[in-house]
Image (cartoon, rainbow, N blue to C red):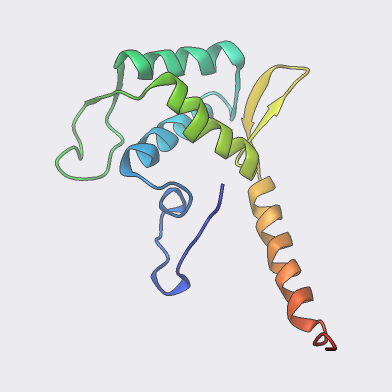
Length: 134
């Protein structure tokens, strides 16, 4: 996944930096809230149940902060395969969520922050390199 941003127009919401569409932002927020409610760690079955509820349109939430949904209970629907492909997999690859193969659990992680710091350091190294001789 490629994250492109304009530092002069950086959104205040991290989800808007990471995801392309409003629907992806809503689903990612719901996922993170669900994981937080479970002590920041859920098992594979709980993730599957979440994805199935989304797919079937049975997930009801009131955390959407945008009009006309603000403060109202809303049913959210999102294709299960697209959830794994466009939400969960990118969140894992960026270090927002970690999957433990032994415990078979997903948990929120700070690896994204560490990677972004590493990217900043890479830029500093590039900036300080002498010009190439021709």
